[in-house]
Image 1 (cartoon, rainbow, N blue to C red):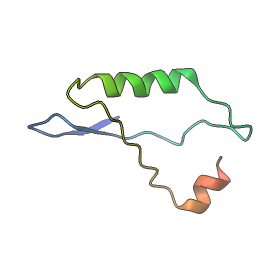
Image 2: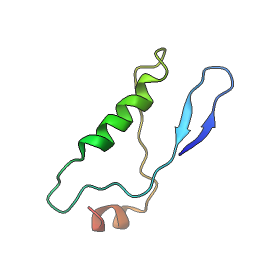
Image 3: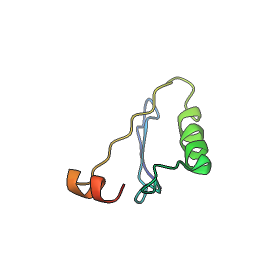
Length: 63
């Protein structure tokens, strides 16, 4: 979900639910494509930064 857009440089904050990487570490190509689309929407910025705001114990347990 697009949550915020910087009024000048158009940097965005996008939120999502829990990532869908399973116990085996498999990746989801659709999720990766979605991140690429988000990154490509602003050609002035080539870097995409991802923050996992969950407590560390939750992130490890859900992986």
